[in-house]
Image (cartoon, rainbow, N blue to C red; front, side, top):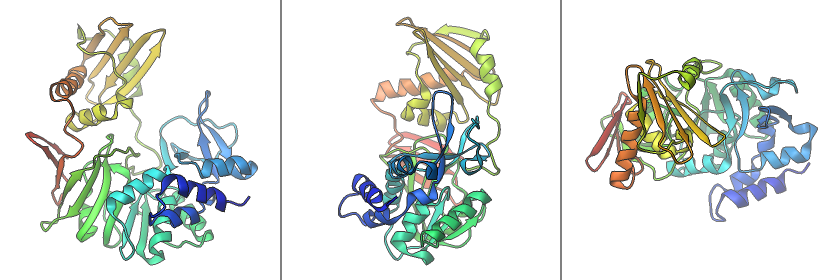
Length: 376
């Protein structure tokens, strides 16, 4: 099928007519980079084969949505039709408008050398190369299969950035005017600051939050900037084929166990995962909490667990005040209540627009008015 009209239509949707990215989007064959992907369904995700249904392929590839390409260690390229993998996505082609938003925060223009952290399918690297030229773009990913296939598919499209298999939390190959990550980190890897040239800018997200950090290299080897008044969430960096196992067993315990402390909650049950601002504030102040939420027969149940053994469960039927069970060394629901108290007292949370100072070791210091926090 002729993909050019589809790519042009995508460019119309995600760029302004005067945008420097318009031609890059219109000329980058996203479908070649995503021949197979995982589509959600009532029974779980199932693999989709683009060449087997070209019309569906074009619709998916040139939509402004994320296409998941790998779940756990199983890439869609290697999946059988009957496969239904469980676990977290470990690679995707991010929705184009979000990729461009991250590039916009970085203020990328011709003449700059740019590092793309998180190659994935190679679409972001392809857009950068279309704008800047082959020698100006380097892209890294920890997964050797992803870097190999992205390089081959970009090469077939006439795009030849430098693509390397690198753990981005360690030393980086070269120095750059811009570093843009479509994976999230906590804290900022010191190697990024070392690789960032004087006056250079990095744009990334803090792991398990929707906070976009935009910071420019400072004279002390760190960086200063702000949390953007915008939001995005990306997969966190990983060191192997999959993420470490989560706390599923503790979640199962928390769903049914009697708490050491049982009380009535002051606020309604909240699906924290879908409440990005609250989730981000909670992650900044009390990192590492995992969440589960269910609604069945008018009963809303939220579960919070932590690797230190702490857990909380809140159940709410109708408009009745929720019943909260908590156990372990910390009271996780109380941590959430403190975030919601702040929100009600101040009318907002202080995250977006906060000033950022990153020390050379990558520790992030946030400040807005009298509020401050450290992310290490």
